[in-house]
Image: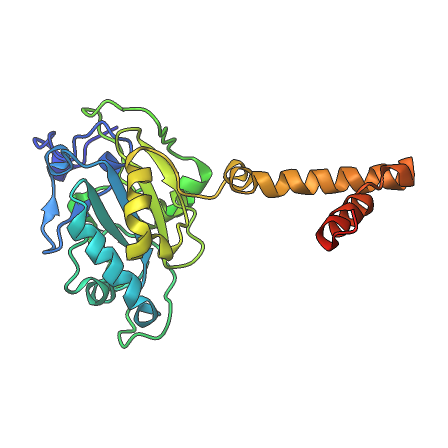
Length: 271
């Protein structure tokens, strides 16, 4: 693939063997571009990908405080905000005072306007494209224009088209905002998508982060339910078996009343 003119002679930019990190264009909380991806994410293990918007932001300020506390406490992780808004100021309003990284706004993401912001010129956010790159849009990701193989490293020296914000939300299975995904850098895989905001509450986050850091998902699985309820399920199976024995085998199998009568007799001193 041809390297965009603005990147010619800067082949080290965005070098990373991770299939996700090398495809996202990030900025620090200050707005400064993160060009040396390998250096910036050295020692990082977990990415919290947060797709959000200004619309309804007032209703989830508690979650934002939890996420900020998380970003400050767990240094082997990074929180990345993916704005689904159409105007840069909308993203800036959400990010004000937050220590989160952000995906660049100038990627031609074709999000539909949400809510009724003061500014009406929706083209403002689409005028400039960062470094002249051709960002993968949502439709292209859905159609598989470029296959992204997670779970393995890639050749960091090969240039690949970056993901737009809209393109990444497709990979995250975002249906509405807020939407959170957990990505594990050492295994190059998504561990969980559409994670509940309560996962970041103080009483939950220490346990959850240790699970994510170990490359596992905190999502509830059938095996987890069975393990938690194994004794309840065993008693249920015994009860069903007893009922079937009495129903089809006759009253000789209905021993529980006789046992209870014996116990009552002993307690009353009759036996």
